[in-house]
Image: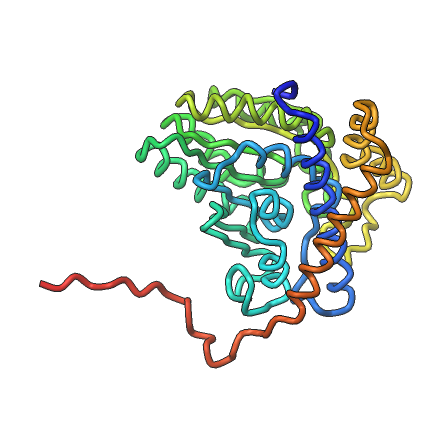
Amino acid sequence: MTTALTLGDRKQMYRALWRIRIFEAQVQRLAAAGEVPGFPHLSTGQEAVAVGVCAHLTREDALFTSHRGHGHVLAKGSSLQATFAEIIGRESGLCRGRGGSMHLVDATRGVMGATGVVAGNLALAAGAAWAAQVKADGSISVVFFGDGATGAGAFHETLNLAALWKLPLLFVCENNGYAEFTSREEHSNVTQVSAFAAPYHVPASTVDGNDLLIVHAAAGEAIARLRRGDGPYLLECMTYRMAGHFVGDAQHYRSKEEVAALKEKCPIERLQRHLTGQGVTQAELDAIAAEARQEVLQAVERARADPRPDPATVRDYVYSAPALATS
């Protein structure tokens, strides 16, 4: 699948990585200044997984993400301004400023929900996959989750059901080595999450989640299987998060040496080295990053200037109001 990417495609993906990286930096900056409600969870360092997988998705494909979902939403095509407006609680946000960082929904783009409940998104994704199977329109469902979610019963129940019904569901585990503040080896005797797929006879693979081209190729093969009707697939992407579990996390559970070593595996720098090897100049790469930065900063400032929701509308959108059939 990597060979199918043109040089132009790879440069666009480089831009997409930078958009997410800069977006998350702005969330961190404004959260530290008290402008972001709650404790946002950043995907800094994990951008290659979002971009590599979502590059294969259409607007009709359903995407479900977790509390660390900003990158997935942006990679699926949601507006920078509307996403940031939601995170800072503005009326122009994806959910009219009511959902915030952990509840991003953009149904027009197939973003069907983010949740702060660990593993809470898995069963919902299976439901969307079942709907896609019934519609038989070639669409699929994708769910992102961290390695900590594999300790929840919902993960195993959903994996079993997806296998039983051969649902077009792609499980994408972003294994960053930590379940909140607990390292993988401290909470599980299973080293690789992909091993959980074997008892359910679900095909699976573990790839380098910091190499965008590897993620893109693996996701492309998995998604092709789903679209053929071959049932679910579990893709484990070994990655890391540069920031803490949430903005403000002091990260006492990992050493400065560990964090420094992980930063050497930056997915943006990995793709940059690949592109320079393909003849792209550093000046062009710098221009791509600068354009992405300007785009994000403009969107952020527009979002900050947008009004907050009117308190009088607090009860709006709480329940759907379906039209009743009349005889």
